[in-house]
Image (tube, rainbow, N blue to C red; front, side):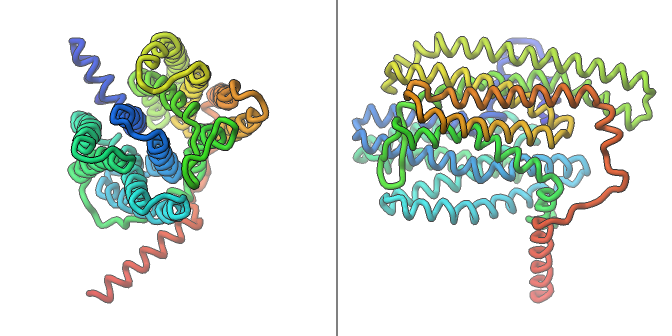
Length: 488
């Protein structure tokens, strides 16, 4: 993310409103592009299906299939995403950029095999036709690659290329959907094909960018697995964040608001549509974290840690720490204030716009939308604080905060099933609030003794953890060496 901050700083220094909008646009696409693309495509496809006169059952099945693929791909990639980000940062710091691309192919291979087996079994038992199974599995595979590619593209400076890939994907999905509906009978398969085309194009363009910027080397594709043993808390932090963020959707499907669409596909359109649209309210905080916190906070952060390496005096270190934490508090308050304004805007203007769209909003859906906008707003600020904990390498604190988020969000949503359906969404608010409190307390405790954690909690002797993932990597590498000797 530091690379993004440096590049954006140059954009913000340029004069003119165009440079300002371009900076915000790049940031938004880089940090939230895939998820926003998923929501935009899903809502757009729903409107296309409605205008084409697609049967209600087929519309619900289409939404379920796309939603299941989105959640399944996010879940399987969440375990690797943060660890891989750390691996990429380490390789670039060590000037070993040739070791980056191989890890992308390695992690995608693992996820497509293991995740593909699990999701493939589910699809085979889901009670849908073979065509739906093929298209849904294709969408899942594309999403896995797109999610992982975005982790790697944060290190790429060609933001214009990333923006083009995003726009091309949206355009391809909508245009192909319109064309297919023009010449073919409206069906869920036709529109699902359009979604696959959109994500397929984005996947191809992202891979082209990766091949352009990262050279190929001799590093093994599974060398990165060692980082899973070294930074295991990061893996669980990503997984717990994903569980806390999306478990409430799955739980509601099993409640009174949920319904069986077909086979193993369940949904709760009355809750899912407001949840997807409310998720858009966190865009402002996600953008602000990169633009405001990273551009303004990172230079202070770098100066502070640089004093430890450059033999700064105790007084210089104390002054730099005080200045860094002052900027941090200011930027976090600024971020929270922006999110508050955005939530208020979504609750007023956003509600009026949604009523004009053919999404079938009724009174109870409007209630869910308001509730979830508040929940996502709290989550956005809490997630920003958690990311700051990662900046300070407080992996334990981030793990505790996200673990609390996953536990409270899931259990509180389960508890809400015992009450009137109008209270659905309050479980997620409870989880987000617990996440915010835990992350905020941990940040204050950690920064109060920041010098202690930097100097006194580090190991005296450097050691390398050799766990199950390291042994798997060594086993695969050994087999590759044996194969090369046989073929030589």
